[in-house]
Image 1 (cartoon, rainbow, N blue to C red):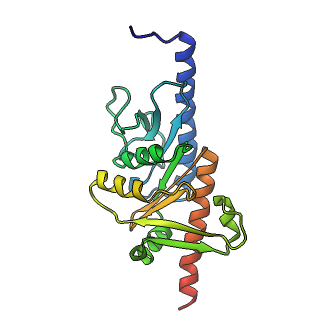
Image 2 (spheres, helix red, strand yellow; image 1 turned 120 degrees about the horizontal axis):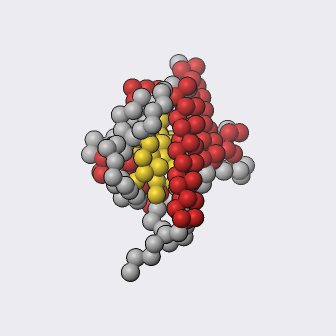
Image 3 (tube, rainbow, N blue to C red; image 1 turned 60 degrees about the vertical axis):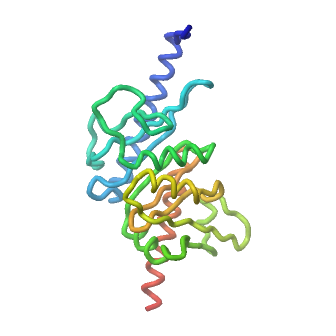
Length: 221
């Protein structure tokens, strides 16, 4: 027999969902003002806090939305397979399977942010043939939880497969729990963390490193 949820449980779940949507709206607004979502690109997700034993819920941006404005249909809920958790006319971002691949592989992941910038695209092309880009000697690497002297962080780069399941599989194969990000060649970065704050910090640190490296390459010419 299916056990009915109490009114209190339903109320708490609704509050958690509403909070996830509010969090996504704030991050969406912040990144849009930085120009990180050109031409409706990019996507965001957060894991909704649910009771132990309940199916996972992911709040994710809807497909094809102008992220510089707000509408009542900017977000929806999906399960860990990337399918809408409830009947809806909205479509999840086309790249939701990449988000779910990361959530399934990184146990403590609670938020994932994907943006397209000129700097991260340039870096992905400059180092794409190597399959990774390394950074060392930067103070800001500490924001990525690399604290030791002379630390080196190696960020993987995967090909930009048009077939999203293939792209999600490629991302899943290179995930390193110590490195909270992955670049897709000439596409953009996925960065994540065990909280919204951590995911935002990681993304900002990576974007700083990308911009620094691009400008350094120009100065050397």
